[in-house]
Image (cartoon, rainbow over the protein chains, first blue to last red):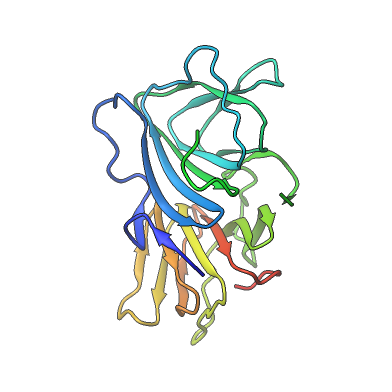
Length: 122
Length: 122
């Protein structure tokens, strides 16, 4: 099976967290294969721009592991408030946006992107 | 894309943890697709039987999210002591065993099995 790592065979999801808020979210690839990308995302207060909705061709399974966040689906009236351990399956083309992420502690996500799109998208 | 859930589109990895040690490890399927199975594993003191080594055809990416555990690779002299957040990529056919899992708190794992084997195997 073809496999490309980020960089390592092992690591800690809570290591190398930023000491201060980041201007942008940080993405660390953990595992990349055809049709699959696993990554850690660290958010420090970022949110989707006003009016912006992710509309992904690929499916995504995502879990919040630390911090807090609020995620809204376009087909739901209110955002889902996420606490550590909360996971969501986001079906392809199900529009969603991140309303809020915590700053301290940072919001640490593990996201599994599933599909055929070769490069990062949302 | 064909997709079969465990049961839900959302949940919490730390919910429904056992109040008392379980006789066996608990497995909850979170996402199942051809060539992929994502599952939560809750261990409460279980370990691989003496002399037993997992020898998996499929690759596995696994992270310990709560509790403690000790995992040994056959090609390494000493076990790896895992703390929450520690993840490992286990290449196909890389023999390994679980030397120890914590009882209280339980050891909560998230395991991503990658390959072609349709049913559960270690």
